[in-house]
Image (cartoon, rainbow, N blue to C red; front, side, top):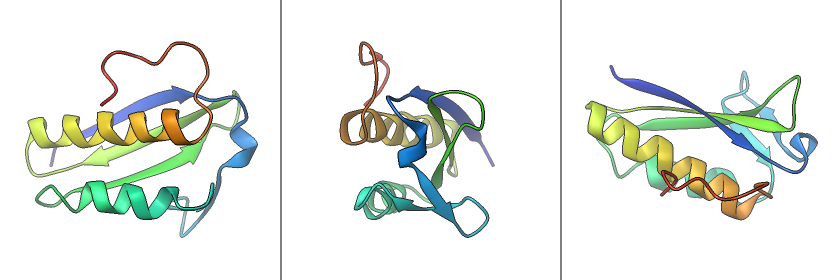
Length: 96
């Protein structure tokens, strides 16, 4: 199944807390339900976000039934993380 891993630079990676083997965000509030709603739009879609261990960034992982759907999901989640959770710098044009 196609997958994509993206990096989103954020102001403070310590805001991101996970559970379930780093596959579910518990913080920031309300971001995980939004990610789940995005993933539900794609056949076999799933996505999770986890903080980097070494830099102020988070990793966005996504997979879906097709490469096109996978990329759309990954870039949509990355855009949501950037917009809702303190993305730093200029917003990358490829983020949806």
